[in-house]
Amino acid sequence: MTAIAWPKKTRELHNHHFDSTIWNDFKFRDDDIVISTYAKAGTTWMQQIVSQLLFDGAKDLEVAEMSPWVDLRVPPKEVKLPMLEALEHRRFIKTHLPVDALVFSPKAKYIYIGRDGRDVVWSMYNHHANANEVWYGALNDTPGRVGPPIEPPPDDIHEYWNDWMAKDGHPFWPFWDNARSWWAIRDLPNVLFVHFGNLKRDMPGEIRKIAQFLDIPINEANWDAILEHCSFDYMKANATKSVPLGGAFWDAGAKVFINKGVNGRWTDTLTKADSAEYEARAVKELGAAGARWFATGEGME
Image 1 (cartoon, rainbow, N blue to C red):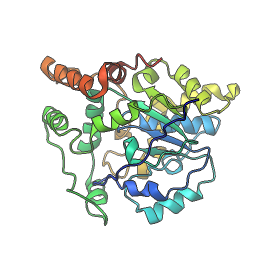
Image 2 (image 1 turned 30 degrees about the horizontal axis):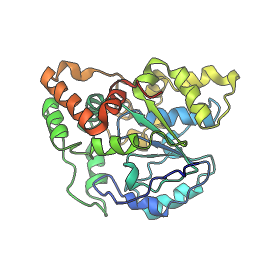
Image 3 (image 1 turned 45 degrees about the vertical axis):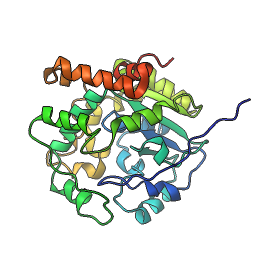
Image 4 (image 1 turned 135 degrees about the vertical axis):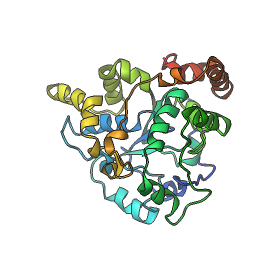
């Protein structure tokens, strides 16, 4: 039997959001669950799904507190690491790092959520454009920031798109780097790929796959409650439970973080040439199979 080549950490990533060194001192447990995305691809949705599976359809779970973002540099690691260690439930934590900036555990379970980059940008613009001074202060003015501050976005979303494409993920972090690194390990036995579009099309079926992957038996008596609590309407109505700091980073509150949950909003803005450029770039960066999966969720079987 061929030995598995487990991913190794080869670099650190720092910016206004990231401090990847937190992972260096993180103490894994064998049953840890790591939820990963580039960003704005369904991270909060997956945290809600996993919480519902772990806690049997319970209402009013404080998911944002229960499922910390490990590589977010605030609070600093001397505060965050004891918080992570103090969690007594089966931990389900999140990351937005590429694989080679993580410490990877062969025993943990990893769920990667993918989404078409065009949909990611439209969701990210909403997130960024509605952020308030508290958000900018936490990211730009706290000790430990490496690199330039994050600036307010332009008023024109097409300009935002052009910058994101030209500077690979600007002003957040590289998209292709993240997608490519996770796509490369999609066949590892402790990695599950889930596509945002497939969750939209068949949430019950996808949740059952996730439960099976995580070895969590489903209590069928509470199945309807699980589905209700994972619905967009429920999460929007109870957004303060799943959004960091209850939505304090957005003047419009937590509900603006859980915005529309739909795909294709870019079709009214991007030209055919814009989309063709993106699609060609996706094939170049991910190969034809990877580009197809990130665009459609198809071709993984």
